[in-house]
Image (cartoon, rainbow, N blue to C red):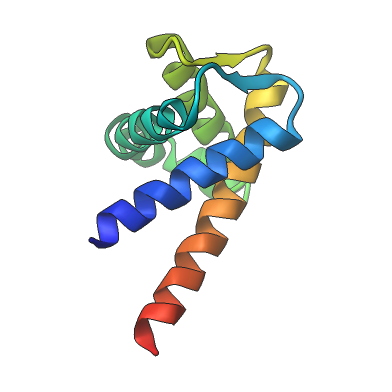
Amino acid sequence: MRIFIRWAASALAVWAATALIPGIKVHGGAWSYFWVALLFSLINTSIGSLLKLLTLPAVLLSFGLFIVVINAAMLELTARWSTALTINNFWSAIFAALVISFVSGLLNRTVKRVGQN
């Protein structure tokens, strides 16, 4: 059940990114947001984890800011592999990655606190 809640939180985070960032758009309805969230999560978990490990020196030298670039690249890869997501430029992907990370982290932390009570 927890995985479905995280999936919904990711879909909501993608929706927030499309609402706030003008260069990113999801084509379709609510299921398209769920599809993009699922694909982004899978890509970020598999390829993103490997990239974060390989670029560990750059991450350490930038005090973790390079992770935003990696997440933006994974979002661009998601847009390339999905017809439901369109990203105009890399700056839009960077800002969208920031929004997605912030919103999904906030929602997951909130859900975790509610589940503990």
